[in-house]
Length: 496
Image (cartoon, rainbow, N blue to C red; front, side):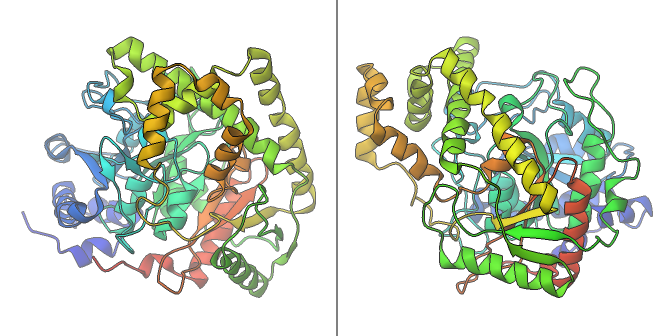
């Protein structure tokens, strides 16, 4: 079997690799070994892959594969994307004994498309943070600067794609978890709209419909082709019959977009500071859009961002409480096997009355209507993807003394009074301050993407976000393709 050099492997995106396999210019086994060699070369630096599946992948690569991505190496996020017979760790020590008994629907669709899965990528525990620093698996690092985060919660996938291990990898987004790591790692990330990608068979939808599976990729066409794989056919057991265009997304992505009306803002919806580089990233994008003939002007939806953040966290904390309780019931895991931050988050959910939770969920409609009114005037909303450049590893870690204090409060069952204080609410908002722009698209179920158009003076990527209207995936993909032609980011590669 001939060895494929890394430079040749890295030159192609997933669509390109699939074309090589289809023409029998390379075999799936040769591609897999190239991906494994690259993974072994860089993973010691990055900690992007936390569960290798090399033997499973080699057996699969030796079979006859079919589908649009037949023979292309692929990585799954180690959260929700279950592969039968393989552990799904979810970034948690409590889940180390959990072995999936069946494939998630998205995994089944990826396998039906011919992909060769050879590992699972790092995530923070239960995907609850915008950094990927799990107590169970350790910190994952940014290929562009190992001292910095790749973002989260799909940080392992974004780091692996940026480092050339794979051209595209599985990801998911419940509050920005595709767009944040894409912005940090200089890759492309699209969060599809609500109901487009199935969540079954174990779930009807994730996070009350706020979360969805997807991918991070080096090229726009890979993401578009992956969306065709995930969204083209309905899930008979799912709650929605999504309106999918008759024309494939990969074709729609190639079409030149019409002259678009784009409103942009650099103001944090929480009223918290936005770094000068994040402002510069949006201004740079606005200039490029104007050059391409689009109408760009300052504008933003009429939404109370602080209220939205609180309502988002009400749902998020409740889901964390349900997740921890379910794992304890099913596996016998003990409290100490869960991270203190998530145990405190779960404890806060128990202080919220059912009626208050229902009221918070009902307010999502108001945010969605307000964003729809914005989209009556503008095709897209442009914002920073994150409010500051990627933070340093450990910068957002809860200090040891606070962890000890949290443990004590949990043991004494005194978290109730704490989580009802103004200090607690202010801390929740402070944790969202580095990533205040992404939750809007999750709450409203609208598609949104992070596009890698900017770098800091220190060379760190800093993406910008576009939020589309209902069914706006094709508009986003077409614009991204146009921007990619002007600024071919896939050619940029970190020096590892």
